[in-house]
Length: 390
Image 1 (cartoon, one colour):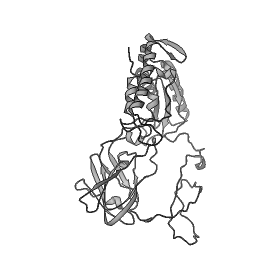
Image 2 (cartoon, rainbow, N blue to C red):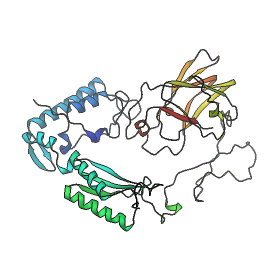
Image 3 (cartoon, rainbow, N blue to C red):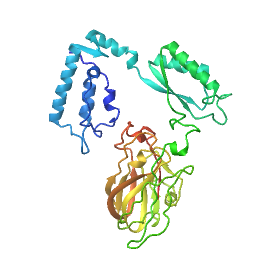
Image 4 (cartoon, helix red, strand yellow):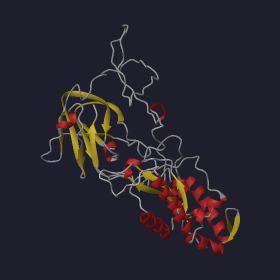
């Protein structure tokens, strides 16, 4: 019996993570006939490593594992010993190895091809495309990024949508044809997707914003609520929500300012307590940040903002103490699961309401996950960089 090893990319794109911490949805479909040739012990190993941690997912217990092992091994043996289909054509087993080593054009990967800041030349186009061909790339999405730098990277720069730029696009298409590569154009003027002067604010990408006002109950309110942030004068109301405030509402580390210290020697971090602070705290090594209150303080949530994607800032271990000497672990923050460019606003972490005088936020990389499609923050440098939002 011969087992061929190949990764099953489609299944793990959205659930990739470290062993023992990812989940596999009950709705994950078994592969089609066309994809079944990719089943292998590599796939079985990954499936074995996955277990559930949340409602709506199943745990891969021994009975489940036995069941799926039987299915996977049976399919693998069947496919290797008989025949497989590729786009409706029956392929003999002797050809599968060659197809795996030399995949058809339809199976080759595509890439994003960035034309950075109006710096594009015919020589550069040819060099890029020939390198793609040599690497086995099947095609590219042409994606221009921003306008010309200041100073320009090349002279003269080739600005988007100018006749010179369109001539470069035409040349790129001709070179792709010459090399047998496929080409498409991304509807993007950068990372903001389709845009231009014809896109007015009300037609642009939008987000939900809010403001909060604390009022005294059992009396009429006749005033203007604070307007949330807006951009280029565009703003529309959605709703006004009123609800009873929980005990301690309005109290935070801004109204009751703590002393802030760190385990890093000779480092003053009190600036983290300053209103409207824009400075960040950064560290590549394990450390802690400590908030010390003069009187016991009840904490229900922690708001963290980063100037750039930072996974480690969203997974602090929190320890608390009443005397600053004896600490007990409270919880570890869980980083939100989301894609890239979702760091436009801060992240609020709720915790079990806890009263203490000392709150220590411990940073270490133990148990960190690698980057994934739904955990983009972890793709970036695994160091700490954050600031507290009041």
